Image (cartoon, rainbow, N blue to C red; front, side, top):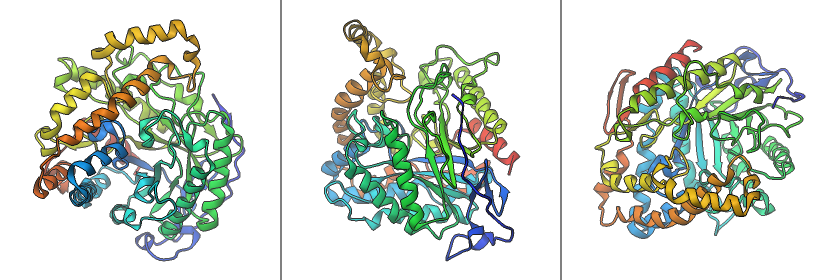
Length: 509
């Protein structure tokens, strides 16, 4: 799919910004990043944003954080298990340790100049108390934005989970298989209300590159997404006329998709006119970076379907990409598999360069699935939860990076039975999922996982404050010294991944 949008971006920018003062107070328009034609610019000069996403932090996910099901379910069960005081203490320490100045220094040292910060609307509003803003949600978000700014790193505020669920999967913290955000205007009204508050809060912070109003939307009717983007752009601009908006594509069918494992955030076929001062954001997950790959990637095969999905005459931000990685527990060929996946990553970085695309690797930190940094295997958190993580893997419970081999003998016949008796399921939205993914989502992702999450919470029973602190500190990077040396508390770097990303980022610093 190749589509040309008519750009409405004018010329902006001038020389003379004071970089050291751009994160405080009121500034002129020149201090903000701005879209000019097909470039993101600062003071009229093109700039590429290169970095990673801060996932698993203010938006937690099952495969990244170790629980089953959805974040709101895990939090609910932990609140029951720990009690309110310990629950609040644990998650406050988790948010504190997960990203500190050491993380910001490390990211700056490898050439990164932008971090996409994934957040859940539930930090700012309760479903049972809607439209009452929770200022506590800004405590750690402000801290991280300021830490990044102090080390020359921009941030993009990414609303990864919206009221009602903007998509049909776990990563929007949606405990159903329906994206009800698109069915109820009140959910959309609440999202606009929240963005007006966030935009008002960050409007003078020029180290905020901009806002990603919605991650990976799934609108089966197409037009509702377009209408919402027009509405949210107008609402944010009324409060904050300066910051860039980063707009994701939708989940849909892209004809060239023969080598991808996900088409979330990829389809721009219904986008006709580019909104002003907006960057269009695609997600690029190659199937050759995951266990579902038909074969290992080899140098002889080009994985370039992404080339056909570019929007011309506007900047492109590849805001999610990256493989999962094997461990010795996954078999004797784990190193060979990881080597092949690193080659896929290098190819994707090359495609970014070819198209002058900014990017954000998914993800900076997790429990060891695909992050650049992750807790040591003997950290308190992983030591506690390893039996549960092994069980999740055996049951193929998570919807990302899973290997279906342990359960294929169970679900294969069910999938075949459904195909034989209800063949139209192969075309059920989203048709890229096919029956296999629908079964995974509804049976293992919902029915199984919403019960497994209770078992996850049981591992926290009886823990005191010191033990909870130690669990949270498992995600602490440590005292940063230089890129190759860090006094780590419990985290380690994925060295080859760090080298690959640093080589690319530093080359265009």
